[in-house]
Amino acid sequence: MLKFLGVIFRLVRSIFDTSNQVVGGQLQVTALHCFPVALFDAAVSRILCRSIDRLRMVAFDLFTLMSVPQKKATNDSPKAGLVQKLNSLLESHGVLGDSSIGAVFSYPELRVEFINRIGQRILSPVYEGSDVSEDFQLSDIVSLESKRLYDSQVYPMLQVSGSWSGSLTLKDLWGGDIPAEVSIWNSGPKDGLDGRFLFLHGEPLTYSTFKTMLGWKDRELLLALLGHMRDAIYFKDRESRFLRASDSLIKRFGLKYPHEVIGKTDFHFFGVAHASEAYEDEQQVIRTGEPIMDKEEKEVWDDQSVTWAATTKLPLYDADGNIVGTFGISRDITKKKAEDEARKELELRLQLAQRLEAIGSLAAGVAHEINTPTQFVADNVKFLGDAFSDIGKVLSACRALVEKSKSIQEMDAERDTVLKSIEEVELDFLQGEIPQTIDQSLEGLRQIASIVGSMKEFSYPSSPEKAKTDLNRAIENTLNVSRNEWKGVAEIELELDPELPKVCCLVDQFNQVVLNLVVNASHAIASTKSRQGAIKLRTSVNGYEVLLEVSDTGIGMNEETRSRIFEPFFTTKEVGKGTGQGLAMVRNIVVNTHQGRIDCESEIGVGTTFKVYLPIDCDDESID
Image (cartoon, rainbow, N blue to C red; front, side, top):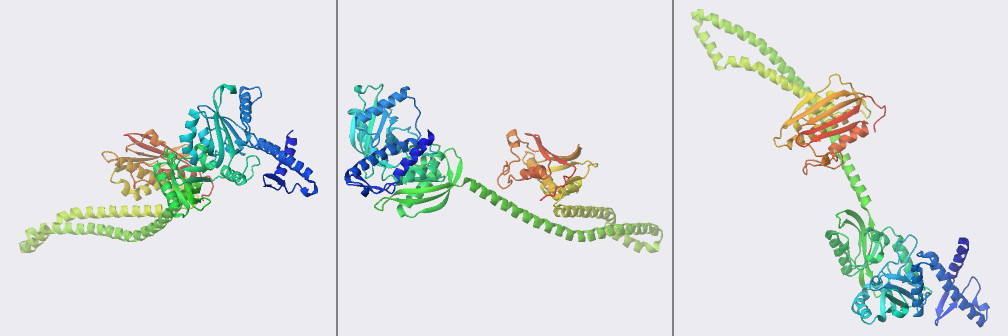
């Protein structure tokens, strides 16, 4: 059966493709599969023309039947009986199913109950993949230009007299205008219907005809474009009200049928800011006639969600060259915008990494340069300490000599001079303070040497491959380098396992983990009322892993915040103090780079503890 219908369908489609023209109201066939009409006499030609005309009518019915989804209804169902009755009543009023629009609406709801085949093809076109159906009201098929006439004359006349006739511009559910001669009347008791109905009969006013569909090819092409184009296409009048919109835009608006958008504006769907900007752009196009090309628009919807679109808006002209509105094409670039932002963020991070690498190299060089003179100074101070110790012995001998000279009268003057000098220079004080000063200087120089050494190790780029690393030493180096971040708010407590095995890791990335956790802890403590607290770092062995615990006595976090701390760009810190990258970076280094894991425990008003688990052994894989 399907194969048979396919053959018939191809046959009637081929008939549609034959060239023809209307002359003097009669159909003239100029070609029919290579058989010219001139081969036949006049009588045969007339019969052939009438046959061809009738065959075209049958072909159109079959074409419509096969291309338009039909509602399933059994002959014995109440709905099928009502449809048959309504169709019969339309035909009794001269509504021919192959040439006139016929529709029936419930009254007073005015919702469609039946529409004949031509009416369905003209008013509610359906194509493959379309969601459009014949679920509409009478007002939905009245064009905007006839809306006032409908409200002021047609509908009141129907309520008073039950009928109306005249010229009325209808529109299909996609917004296309259809000038027609329309008759509308109410059903009466003699119709034998259960309920009240409103009947509509429409005939075209233009050169085209509903029967042959001549002149409607451009309309069908436009409908195909509106139905299948992924980009949003729309037409608007001079007041920026929608005249037509593509199926993709209808779905973006959350609507089901195309006619639901007609007559509305952007203010019905978007927030005021975007709708106002779009309105001003369209009015500018109407005033100047100049198009707006590929403008990126931030679309803020009523629910405050945000999308991005690249929009082109152009003036819409009528046949006389007057601007009657605008039309535009809008492409959703939300995903592309997010990708661009991510790329820009990555570029910034790469630039930052490059700057940090350059600073690191510079810091390593500076540390090396500082280390040499520091060593000189340390050696000289140590020499001074040793020398002063020897001088102290000489001074002690001098003191003993002065004491013995008291019995020698001839040395009274010299002795008095020496005692006076000792008193003036406060020799006792100097002998007590100079050794302490030298010891403190040596301690300071040792701290400088330690910091310089930590800077060299912290800044020196590590191997791209994991290597066995002393984590305790790495922690101490990081604390030395970051002293300025925590010394004003926290005391550092270290419980580093002296038996901790060396761990296979990238030392510079591990240093970054420790630095980020310590800085995060110091900021948490600084947010407390006292602005003072403690940061405790503890290392231990946990089976095949090592455990690093970083605890603070900061403000703590609630469960909602704790569940989001590893999300990129999430931060609870004030603007300019936090980027939302620190903990996300920590998690990436621990989990993705080192195949470890990280946990967080926190309590409001008590503090937070991060637990970092790293496998001890290497995985023998190079790190890019």
